[in-house]
Image (cartoon, rainbow, N blue to C red):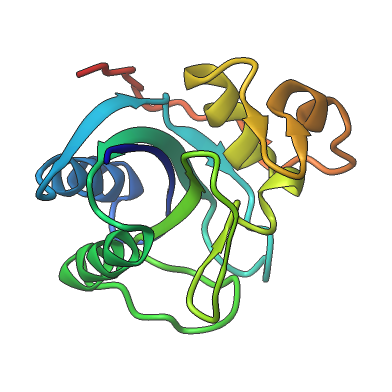
Length: 168
């Protein structure tokens, strides 16, 4: 049975715009999966250590027959194929792919927590999510626009490169 899944993408190394574009192509090529929609790219200040470049972030919507854990493994393979090396917590990376929502399911395992546990406090996740899915209710957290209105801190900054919004 297919699920609609939202994936958060982030990069701040090795041409972030290219990294996100390559990751979106890899996501679209996953077996039993369709890329339905993607947000614009958003620039954001690092949430962690400030001695690193700004990030570029996006959210995409997939429809997949993959289980949540099979999808997680596929995301990790994409990250590795794009050269991801984790240097430090909340540190710089060429690509980061997170399962934000997997249908309306709540998943709590040692490997995976869905909805993503920190998404309610991250404008660089909520703003692109609201762009492609206005009115979306995040299980156990609330409506995306309400969460945006409650944010106490902002990370999103203007991005001057050309952005494009694609639907498949």
